[in-house]
Amino acid sequence: MRELANVNYQKELEKLIEQHEKEGKVPRLFLHACCARCSSYVLEYLSRFFSVTVFFYNPNIHPLKEFKRRKETARQWAAKNKKLPMIFDDSYPLEEWLIKAIGAGNERCKNCYLDRMLKVAEEAKNRGFEMFSTTLLSST
Image 1 (cartoon, rainbow, N blue to C red):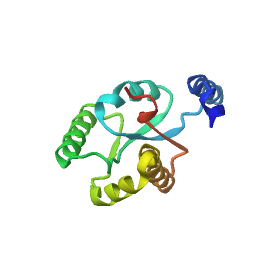
Image 2: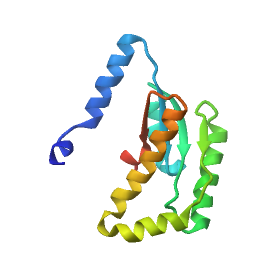
Image 3: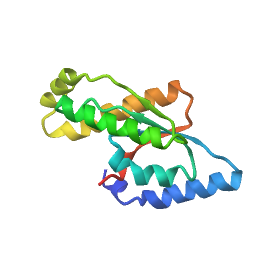
């Protein structure tokens, strides 16, 4: 795991972008977002190099009021930024999530990322995307 920490992923992204530009490619990117606020810069940056579709899927947000607030904010953002399509998974399986989280102990954060990334990967594959990621990798 320590080896991964030594990789500069921004530099890796820049190499990938350079390669795609040389080939004249604009890859389709399926991008998970947990909220509009932490997604804005990432989306602005990545949409210059990729054809981005945003995916809102967040079964871990609690309480329900906060989940609804984030979802509504994301919907408002999407309405203003029509060039970036946004797909919403409106499910709120909090009970299932809590059971997973309680049983995970110290692995709760790891499981949260894993749960969401597995869902994002599945959706990306089903929708024919070349790649997927999450804004959580660079959110504040």
